Amino acid sequence: MSDVSITKLNNGPFLVKGGAQLQDAEGNVFQVKEQYYLCRCGHSSNQPFCSGAHKAAEYVECSTAIKEKITE
Image (cartoon, rainbow, N blue to C red; front, side, top):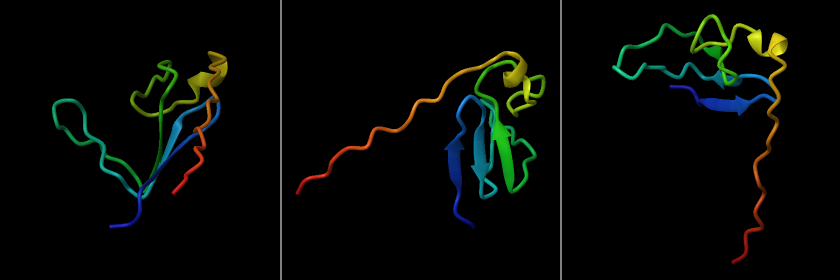
């Protein structure tokens, strides 16, 4: 299996790469591709996938990960 990565795009969806399996709450598996986008704004007409509706909804969320200084 390839490496899976999930990237949070500023003001947009999550980008999932690596063909990760996606299941609903009941364990049913969605048909997915090697790369897909998951909605974060809640306005998609194609939930749980992104339809681009975040643009019209003017969805804004661009938090970043906190970089912690590691000391030994």
